[in-house]
Image (cartoon, rainbow, N blue to C red; front, side, top):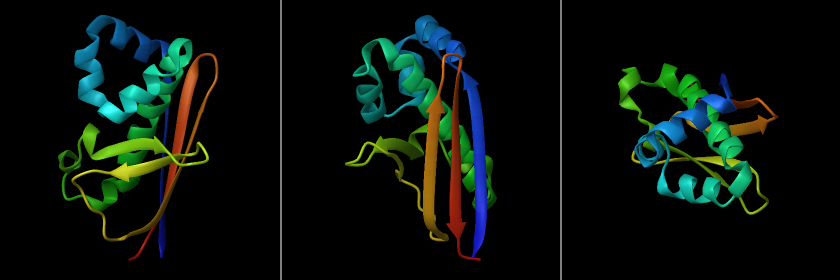
Length: 125
């Protein structure tokens, strides 16, 4: 077994500005419909959740990149961050498969100015 890890941090204001500037175009480029519905349900805190999911996707890409032939083999919509029945974030891969990943976990956090995410995966060598 081998462990792969990725982390990312983003300013919440950058995500808010991108959404306010480009609106649905930005949202549809980065997030899945399920992610948009979730973030929009958070009303005044939605930008925290959008930023958290943005950081999560970047952390996912950093984690799985050693398993790809080309960094463009994965897109924003191939990794979806949803919540399990207990409200914990989990990763759902869409239209992409990683046979070597035996387990993958994610943690997302945010404060007033930043959102951060860390992904750890156990892979079979």
